[in-house]
Length: 602
Ligand SMILES: Cc1cc2nc3c(=O)[nH]c(=O)nc-3n(C[C@H](O)[C@H](O)[C@H](O)COP(=O)(O)OP(=O)(O)OC[C@H]3O[C@@H](n4cnc5c(N)ncnc54)[C@H](O)[C@@H]3O)c2cc1C
Image (tube, rainbow, N blue to C red; front, side, top):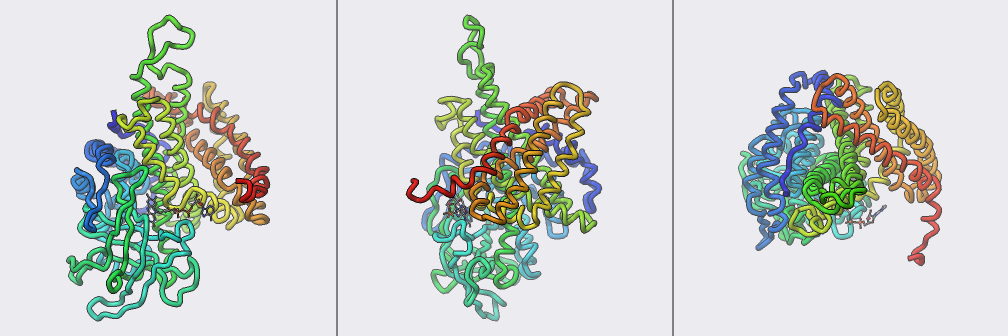
């Protein structure tokens, strides 16, 4: 019931048709990419995800990670599954070959990671954090630090963590109080002593790897107030000797792990740094340059958390379909004397399933397109193309993080609804997906913070230029829909073109509003992000559906799969895109009512 089948047909379709292996192969450094390579990587990853990660999802949830005597123990089977993942080189898939990775594009790494996340969200979170740590260290670390720590992080022999949160510093990272002091020891070279407490640190301790490399935000003496005064330090759990072997334990300990709603197998740790004489740490990036370095890690992780949203939604979808096809209940409408039917025969159940299918298809097309933009930004030679790809990623990051994780919460809940009481009880595993998904909208910057980021950073900062680029691209796609045969394409065209006009007007209004009335802009940032997510996701879905239409016409590919993509796109056009009109009104007219509310209102 709770098994996982990697959605290889859809992944492959998006990679070969929407992204295009030939477009990937045209990027410098990727000329070896072709469909055979893509297939072999996907199939191998799918095997480990389905056979080694997925069977541990429910048992991991039941057993949970345990903390006793300052040591965290992972649930049974997790060590072996992690070893298969690390030994297979999956951890370093998108890392450049000269730094010890596999040198494959993010366009391939993203689907691979999706499969591991779908199979076991709690276990795959370890790799997600590690990936961010690798990116931050590779971008901001000095040569000596990189030489000592990167190879083991990339191989997955060691794992990385991100340490921002403290009791008084959640969304407000600038309130961090952890301290760092320059220290001098001829045997250790330039280093710092770190003291303070961090909370909610995912994989702060565990028994999957030999060492754990913490990236910790702390404040140097005389640092400016707020986030501008933060520096980033690399603090190993076990100190590393000059010859690269492990030395004595650092002054770092896990105090406890949290008992929480979901993701029971992912240890969320309270960490104490420097209880004795200070934890030894090394500066990553410049003094007071901590936020820039941490943002490299956070941006990577924010897209990764969006991917987690897609992944858990896919897992819940598969189980909901399974139940909808096998659970017999009631008779078909209009046939009161007929045989009882599977619940998938009821139009409302089909509506719910189509809603999930369509949103997943939109989300997957969106995030894979962002992965392609990452590849372009890292590999294209032309500076202008590099810059515009980077601007696109920047713009899409809060949308992917918030829209996909809000969807994950809604989709996992709808999947429970489809299964009825069987979904609500723990046995089927559907309830676990709903619990596991809940935190995705909270960690890596809450979705409220993402909405502010979209409005104030991504729109206002460049006067909406990157956003306008995306809008223009979506507008340019419209005529393609008019050339397709059948009744679906005109419907899609009508709804997308109307939504795009509404989005143009609304986004221009939001830029002006946010500049002249910041509170007003902040009040409607979340519905605006929803509107943007719905439309941008819809654009990528309809683009995929147009490709599916073409393939059908030419008798290419699996006809049922292609027809399903078109059906999902039409559903999305009729049921999701029209919401833009309402959201536009809410955004442009709904801020004053929120700001009129005072504490006494509640
Ligand atoms: C399971 C789990 C794992 C985690 N893993 C890590 C980790 O590995 N490393 C790490 O450093 N942290 C981690 N965190 C912490 C996580 O990133 C924070 O919980 C999150 O950033 C929100 O901070 P907070 O919980 O203090 O909520 P608060 O900041 O108190 O926010 C509460 C509410 O107020 C809203 N709010 C706050 N400020 C604003 C604002 N300026 N504008 C609009 N709305 C606002 C928020 O959106 C939210 O709805 C983890 C948390 C959990 C639960």
